Picture 1 (cartoon, rainbow, N blue to C red):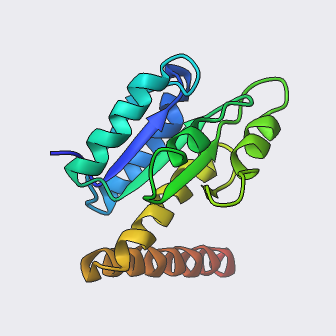
Picture 2 (cartoon, helix red, strand yellow):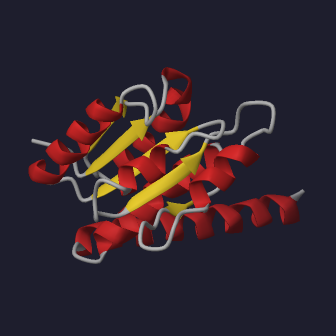
Amino acid sequence: MTETVSIVIGSESDLDLANKCADALDSLSISNSIQVLSAHRTPGLLETHVRECESGGTKVFVAMAGLAAHLAGAVASKTVLPVIGVPGDGGPLSGMDALLSTVQMPKGIPVATVAIGSAGATNAAYLAAQILGVESEEVRNSLLKVREDGVEAIKESNKKLSDS
């Protein structure tokens, strides 16, 4: 069976970002998988992966790539399922080129784009969960718990500050 969220990375150098996304999805009990597939070096394999995911039950794709790669756009061109792009933070432009190539999509081929790097990788997981939460009360409740835990962490930080 295909996983609910397919995380696709352009190269192994993006694996740390993919793992951050997978960890957040795992914490919400959302099944996921990671595949290395390049928009430019393995376009045939990428298309096969997207088709297999669609027929296997994948609901959301997360595509991560650095430099001026077009991985999220390449995935979005092959599916009408939601695609979330995470710009990698490497290279001489520290991810700005990846951001622009991910966010600047032509009309009719949307890619939801999150922040560059680690924060984006985690937020991609939460955005995928929000998409899945449209049809799953269990996922919505898990997300609410994450938000509540965040509030409690802030309260605890303020308590420590006032106690010192």
